[in-house]
Length: 299
Image 1 (cartoon, rainbow, N blue to C red):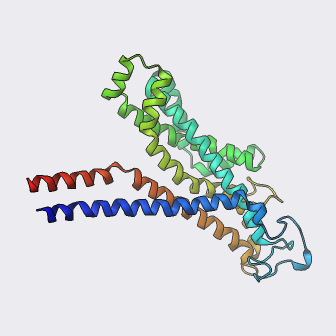
Image 2: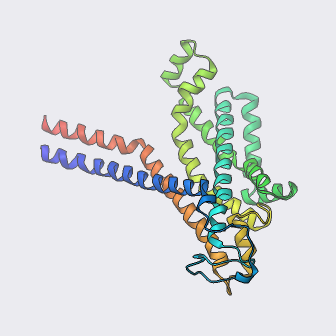
Image 3: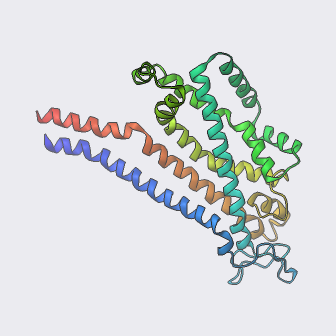
């Protein structure tokens, strides 16, 4: 019987160890990407904005591993410095919509009434339009720029977090521990910080990590359309837009920033999947069920 118990327990432990290993690997890669963006200026082999028309549109070589653009600027340097704009803007955007949306959703779930009605109807308006199209209209009204692109996407992306936080709050607000906290005289701010936010942080965190790649693509799309970062600032979407006419003749000018977007988005999506698997309570419960089952057989 003990053998059967071991067979039951080991797969869940193996899955848990595999999830932990995946999380560590993707977290380390994401940290390396963030560090590379922070220290991009020190890592750049050339001045990313220095023009040298004598070396314009050179193919990848030992001197310029990613080639040069139409102005003779080193593509590797511009991709590295562009990571600062692309990644930092995406992180700031996700932080804004996650914090604002979560606070609005929790407030609606706790108070209900007019606040809940107004906020949810506003979220319905935002969700009634395709997000990127709505953001394009707002960014065009704001006259472009990376800050305006972040603001435009923030104005249309918060409802996801508001609805998630509201549903999670409604699910736990009548639980015994919250009722006990209210009866003990816990103030609303303390109730929010000590009991509600810690219990809904898991789904919000997973959504936020998965959203980093999505927001990075949408910011790049706005820049590609001329509604985001403006030249000569190095940003992956605007770099692709600047070289799109040379895709067949000088493909590295477009493919290099495109590859940077692809790898970054894929990495943050994989990290989000690993975080979701790690926070999934069923992975821990399966192991407990297996141990209980095995103990019953031994008895």
